[in-house]
Length: 171
Image 1 (cartoon, rainbow, N blue to C red):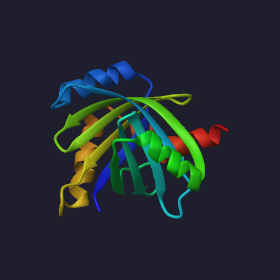
Image 2: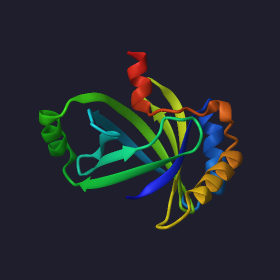
Image 3: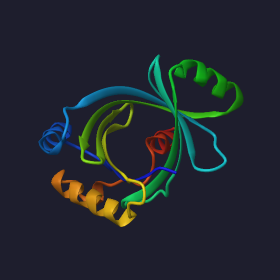
Image 4: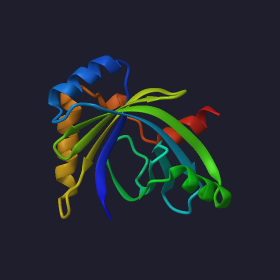
């Protein structure tokens, strides 16, 4: 099962973080508008990510809710018809919450940096170090820690849960 080492943090100065991310990124920024629909799941989390009418991903993932860098194991099913898949899933499964966001994506080596403007929540960032097959997770933790320093992310800004959990807490 693929896995990554990830951290998530609340950010106060999106523009400053954009500048820092652009300095270390291997690529130009990609912008996506994402809608994540979370469904009731027996284990872990299950979400359908709709990027547009022709691009979507059904994602099942398992990770602990902790503020420090954590390993997330996931499976992704890609679809070219996410709206039809949403219809099928919503007929059979309980929708828990929907998260809408504008995501700026930067790539640094094997790492994705996400700067997210989350509807009704604010601004956040994620670091996802995508582990290579047979790569030691400690190496991923080291990469994440190094990027936190370069992006000036403080440990007190880290959050432990998914955006979906934060939205549910507000209700």
